[in-house]
Amino acid sequence: CVQLLDHGQIKLGDKEFTFDQAYDGASRQADIYTDTVQELVVGFLDGYNATVLLYGHTGSGKTFTAGTASVGIVEEEDQGIIPRAICQIFEEVADRQSKNPGTIYKILVSFIEIYNEEIKDLLDPNNRANGSKGARSNGSKGALPNGSKGKPISLCKGPNNSIQAVGVIEAHVEGYEAMFACLKRGSVCRSVGSTSMNSVSSRSHAIF
Image 1 (cartoon, rainbow, N blue to C red):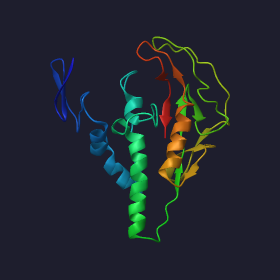
Image 2 (image 1 turned 90 degrees about the vertical axis):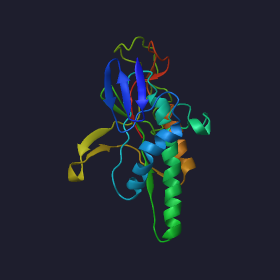
Image 3 (image 1 turned 180 degrees about the vertical axis):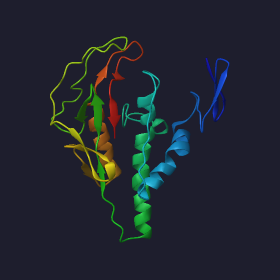
């Protein structure tokens, strides 16, 4: 049994673990976003790299917390990290441009998944919606049926030892509606399968 002792400490059995922040099931999406992501978005627009990584076992709520489950359907208070970040990005850009009218921002978005060591471009129109959907129980490693596939994606080393995904679509978005549309379109193309804990579990790693 896991107990939340305070905002940064949990108890598991007779052991206690301390974190920068810890949340229980009654926590609000808005509080999690404000505490952990909001300042990252500001830093990102200041020119710093920013990454939010969600890790956990099947059924722990990663997709819900990220905000890619039922995009556009859930209540505003239940919106996850990605939808909130999208809104904040364009609000920050509008605020900065009002203070510095000559500043130009160009925002590009990509959405990929990694499944069975293959990279799939979720914004590629040749990737059929739920093309990799299949049944799998108890987390077994059986292969899921392949749907229609888009163009192959390869990894290579870029400037300053960076890693680049060659062939991935970078969609130019000029407002949060356009970026939301990319999130919705890519989310329905993710690989899912049935497990003992979740009938439509995301079976891949996704990067937005």
